[in-house]
Length: 125
Image 1 (spheres, rainbow, N blue to C red):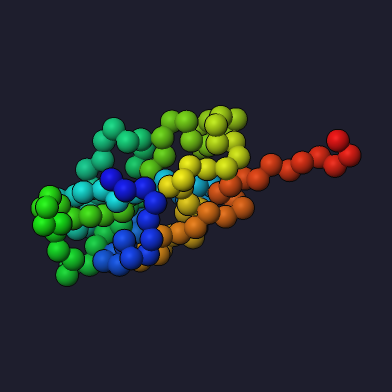
Image 2: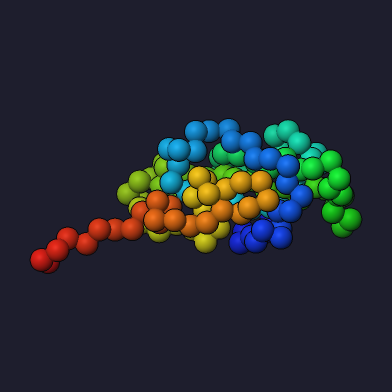
């Protein structure tokens, strides 16, 4: 599974399916995951909570080495900000994280001020 993606990694995507309301999530982790199917919810276990996934165009071929389709998945783990707001990621985000509002099919998404939740430094301290 890869973590840091570019738009060239996601050229075969047809659409993104979200399983949760992404307006409440400041970031999601994204990765490419092997799946036996182009569409529908991919098998996903042991990595955290599946939040969304990409469905592929019908012309996309299987990976010749694994016989699986390479699909992007979006997920969160128990120590991410949505579950642990005062934890490790109360500011900043993991390297593979992006603001889900910037994600689209064939576009990886970006880090934003929202996803990074920059700490506000009090003045006069």
